[in-house]
Length: 294
Image (tube, rainbow, N blue to C red):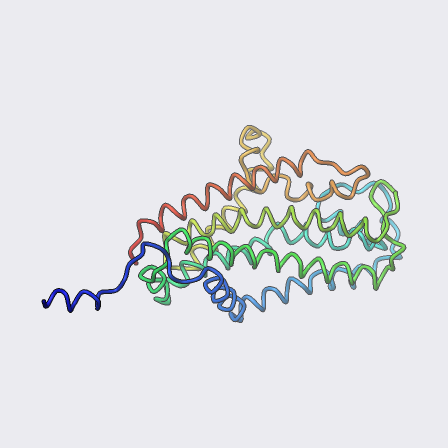
C-alpha cells in the first residue's frame, strides 16, 4: 500500500531532454552578448575598417603607390587607396592574423572554461540536457560571435569605402570594374570563407576549454598555436607540413576574390582544411564533455 501511494510522487523520466533547444540558444546568446568584453571586442573590430579608411585618405595622393601589389595583407591595405572594393577585404585579411582569432578564442574560452571557473557549468551538466546538446549550444554561441565579428567589419568597411571613394571605385586588381552588387557578392564570399576559418579556431578553443577551468589559458594556447603555425608556414624546409597548418595562406588566399576571374585553389584548400579542424575539434570536445562530471 505504501509503495502504491509513493509511486505517483516519483518523477517521470522519459529519457529525453526536457529543456527546449530554442530556449537554451536564447539563454546562451543573451549571456554572450551581455559580457562587456564581448561588446568591447566587437566594437573595436568594427572600428578597424573606419580607421584604415580614414588613414588611407591621407596617403591617397602620395606617389609610389602604383605598381603590381602582392597579395599579402599589408599590400592589400596599400591597394585599398581609392578602391572601395578592396578596403573591407584588406581589413579582414589584416585582422585574420590575430584579432579575429582572438575574439573567437575568447568566446570559446568563456563557453566552457569560463563557466567552469564561475561554477555555472555544473548546472548545465546536472540539468536535463544531453552533453551533445550542450556542446551544440556552446558551439552555436561561439559561431555566432565569429559571424557577428566578421559582419561588423564588412558593414563598416563597405560603408567607409563608399563614403570615402564612392561607388565608382569598385575595381579588381586585374583592372576590371565591378557593379555594386558584384562587389558585395565577392566581399560576402570572402567573409564566409573567413567565418569558416574562425569556426575552426572556435572548435579548437572549445576542445581546449573542456580540459581546463582557466579561460586565459585557452586564449593563450590558441594564440600561441596561431603564431607557431604562422612561423612554421614560413619555413620552406617544412613544406610537407604546410597543408596541415590551419593558418596556411591566411594572408594571401582572400586576395583570390580580387582577381578576375576569381581564383579557387587556395580558397578551396583552406575551406577543406578548416572543415577538418572543425570536425576534429568538436569531436574532442564532445569526447571530453561526455565523460565530465563537473
